[in-house]
Amino acid sequence: MALRIDDKRAVVSEVAAVVGKAHSAVAAEYRGLTVAELTGLRKSARDSGVYLRVVKNTLARKAVEGTDFACMQDGLVGPLILAFSLDDPVSAARLFSEFAKTHDKLAVKLIAIGGKLYGASELDRLSKLPNREQALSMLMGVMKAPIEKFARTLQEPHAKLVRTVAAVRDQKQAA
Image (cartoon, rainbow, N blue to C red; front, side, top):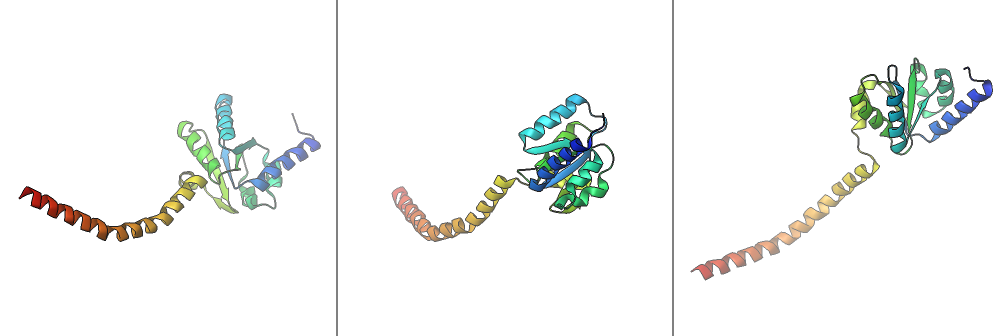
């Protein structure tokens, strides 16, 4: 059933609203997947904060026009499912990477982050990037390490003196 012009405008405005808030986008060809498999993908997307939508390519081109994802316009050909990361910049890449491990019919075509277009070969690398909480904990660990080392260095002369006195005491008790 063909979409009326009002329906097309509604789809474009809905997708454009999501695109305006999204951190990254991934487009994948879903040809050959069953309805049950696509339903599972949609459920996983909802759980991970990813907006997932199958949109006509002409409507998708209009929705991404003038945004950071305009670089995807030329690659939007064929039956594609679009995923936009709303919370974590790499959650869409992580979602498709995990799904593609068990479903070889899903073929990632385009990845866009921050106005740059990446090929499908970058999916694995991007999906392994840490999320925000992991990155912050890594940063805090790096920031805390010099202070801990400094505190251990200041404490070491006293600890060495205590160990030396204890060794002398043990030696005198043994004799």
